[in-house]
Length: 249
Image 1 (tube, helix red, strand yellow):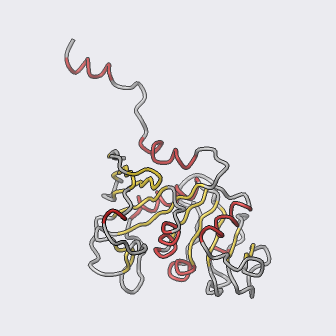
Image 2 (tube, helix red, strand yellow; image 1 turned 90 degrees about the vertical axis):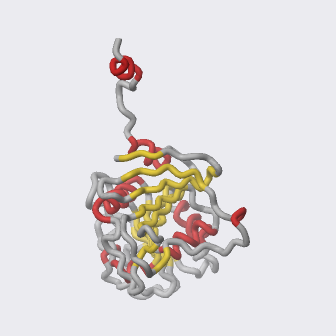
Image 3 (cartoon, rainbow, N blue to C red; image 1 turned 135 degrees about the vertical axis):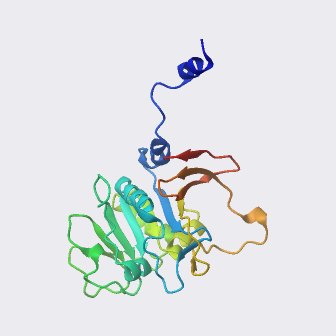
């Protein structure tokens, strides 16, 4: 028997789908909250130019990945800075699947009251804010009247899980993702790195300072090569000191 024939007999009958390995942790049934955060950035770790322009850094495959993440979670969370800069819909237009609930952290009520995330499309809409003026009547407004620390990450997660949202995507911006990582609440971090160098601009993460490398996060990381040259890093923040895998799709 030839070497080629022997090799073919040792292969699996059904190839392993790399997407299954990437998204399976998010799909597991659970009773406790599961939090995944995502960042799209350049090779030099920038998420936007100095003036805040960030659209299309990661191209179409990065956008497809983001929409797929949205389709798998109960709720997507962004800070108001993302709303003001990009006016996102926070839906799943590019992939099959239902759109999640949408939550915006907006302490002072900076979001326009006709912003796209507020469109009445049947999805649960939530705003964490001190400013109760002008929101559509159907929007679930969570303010500080009964809870002074509602803007702390742990309190935000508790409020979302109390409303039945256990699988949570922290989509941005950088300061919002950083706050949740610093609080130790993020289970998985997806970093989509585009083959582009901005040279200046806003960094992807700004965590609390550390004194030495022993204080650095060292997650298990699996990497996936996307069609247009983006590299997707799936960082398991609950597992450290282990080698990951490298897959193309």
